[in-house]
Length: 447
Image (tube, rainbow, N blue to C red; front, side, top):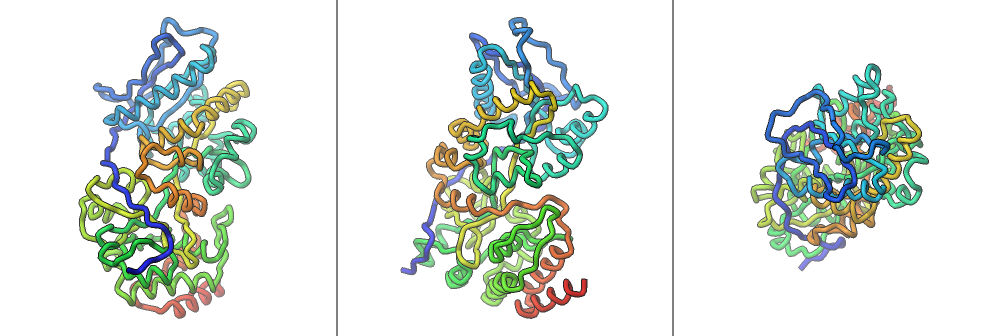
């Protein structure tokens, strides 16, 4: 029986649920019978702001925290998610001893009118009083929010212990320059899953993610390869891992010929061994083949997101989680996720925002919500407290410690586009790794 290096983590995964758009508001106060957040509305959802009338027993002098919560993180058909939000927010209100209310508004997330980001943009100039104090946005929107002046720094607002508890890459996910604008809350990382049946057939009880060992194992790979006008993110992460480089704030990449040669040589070997599924040449997204995995279809290994892994796989499918392959086998992956952002410049309300964030980021509470929403928490302690024992905590911990931050879109630098062309030329057999690297050096030297 062959044995490779990294311990195998097999688990059975949960069924998927998806939510409908919603936009509602509820005012929360500490009370003998705690009110609930009714996100499961049966009437049509308005796209305009909902006016909240405080309950009769509200404390008039209480300070109110205005919170916008993305509907993506409170699906209308997942009452258990709503229940945990209720419990955690009401717990905060009670801990404030009736001195605080939370004006909770469930908002759509996307590009349409009335969604969180478009509303922040339009209201900031004409109706700043209609804005929240705090909301959650995708990390991919953070740089644009900072550039537009929609959010305020969190340095000095959130406790030092809360920040220190984060994974290093997660902390960088919330930074723009050297300033913390987003507090990472929920994380998604791309990684490989292996079919347990294929591993058994290959007599593999452990998995190594080093390039040479992956080739030797001989297990076919499903992954998206095309990325128009940009660079494949798995290839991007492998290149950064091999070079030890990080992109600059302007997303420029330093060219390292040796690292590029190592990564392209790996893909040339995959191509020559017939291990890269031919359909991958047309895939642009994990969604293009997710149904193969979720339906229990035949495959060897595949690139997935952790959210897909935790959410979409039926309990009958045995799968093993591992990092994407790297030159030295050190775990990594492309990380994205949700970050808390502060949208108020009022000093008193900023202090309240800090208290609320410290409350929500307590490891037990963060683990509880990450578990129910089927994403990963942004701090190691919360991952260790993850409520589902089937989750491969050790494997995910290693990946999150070595993660690469997904670049903001559009990521269309000259170097990125040139590297993508070289990548595609190698995996289609048009060029060898050596020829592709020589072409890249010539192209960028001419520029």
